[in-house]
Each structure stands twice: as structure tokens, then as C-alpha cells.
Image 1 (cartoon, rainbow, N blue to C red):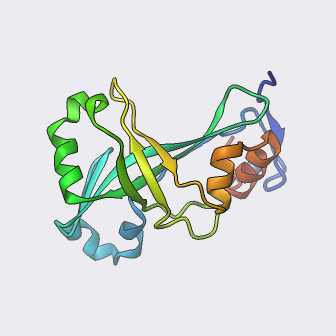
Image 2 (image 1 turned 180 degrees about the horizontal axis):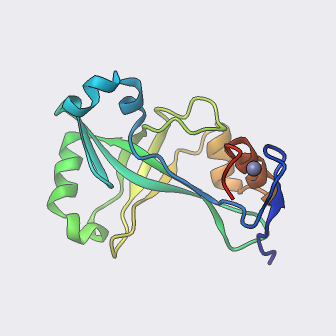
Amino acid sequence: MTTIGGYTCSCCGKYHEKLPTSYGSPAPVYYYEAEPQEREDRFEIDDDLCVMDNEHFFIRGCIEIPIIGTDEYLIWGVWVLLSEANYDKLKEHWNEQELLDPMFGWLSTDLPCYLDTVNLKTMVHFRPGGIRPFIELEPTDHPLAVEFRNGVTIEQVQEIAEKLCGGNND
Ligand SMILES: [Zn+2]
């Protein structure tokens, strides 16, 4: 097993002690597409759930991509659109989510470094102990779905970190 160490960043030129392996998005893509002054009226949002216009229902989960040669994962925190019936069922069983069957959902996060991830088909797998659900991607030829099945290399994880560096993090 390889351990993931630091790297010299091609974006900012600095040495970063730790290669980031986890990225999140605090809201579904539609939130960022809405006019800033409309967001508060149209979206009800917390750390795990979001309702848009009282009729679109989202849950936050994790796409976990194995990093080849390590026992770690590249984790994308994403939002998934559920049917209203499934959302109601989820809220009813919020404290016993592990009892729920997997649910179908539409990916609702525009992932950086991948083209067109919105509306990829997923299955939401619930987990015990307040852990965010595991998001399984439909096995298509989309690059994200391919990586989900086959894993990514440490070099690819580093390339993502360099693209998303921003230049001033450690
Ligand atoms: Zn950097």
C-alpha cells in the first residue's frame, strides 16, 4: 500500500503537506444558478437536505472513488434529486436510514474537473450512524462513472488538487 504524501503544486508552486482527497459542495447546482437575491426565498437548506421551490427535494451524499494502490478514496460531496415520495420516506426514517432500500436519484452537483455531471443517474445507498449516504453512479461511459468503477491514480488526484488549488491554501 502506498501512503499519500505531500506534493509540489504546479498551480501555486508551493509544497503542500497533504494531498486533498475530499471536496464538497454546500448546495445543489440550482442554488448557484439562481439569482443571489432569490436564493433565500427559493431554497430551504441545511447540511444534509435541501428543498427548492417547495417541490424539488435533494439529499447530500458521497461519491467515493478508490485511489489505486492505496486504501483511501477520492470523495466528492454531492447533491442528488429524489422523488417527493422517497424524500418523505427518508424524512420519516431519518434516524434509521440504514433500514431504507436504495433510492434512485439525479446527480445535482456540477463537479469541477468533469464535464456534464448534472443529471447523471445514481442510486443512493443509506448507511447507519449518521454517515452520509453512498452515491452509486450508473455504469455508463461517462468519465466519472468509469473512475467510480476503476479508481483513480494518485497522480490524477494530484492533478485535481492542482486545478482546484486556488493558490493560497497550505
Ligand atoms: Zn497549490
